[in-house]
Length: 65
Image (tube, rainbow, N blue to C red; front, side):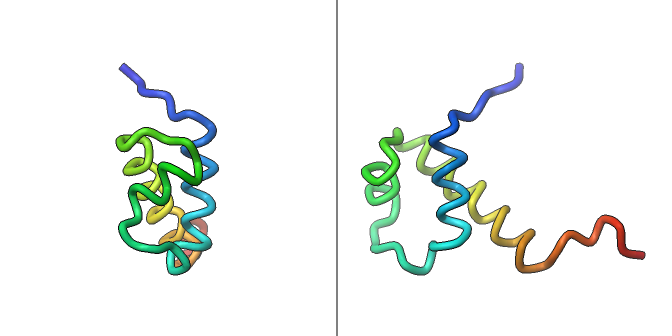
């Protein structure tokens, strides 16, 4: 079974990938309130945001050899 991610979660993930260092602690309540997410969706957004930030920082190396 494939789980779909709501657009709000993806929006939060993108925002977090760019602005994570600007977020106050605790971050889960902040993300939930800012993007109207459930706790699980906020966690998913954080995970996806971390993946996005890592891919931006390391660059897409799929075509490099």
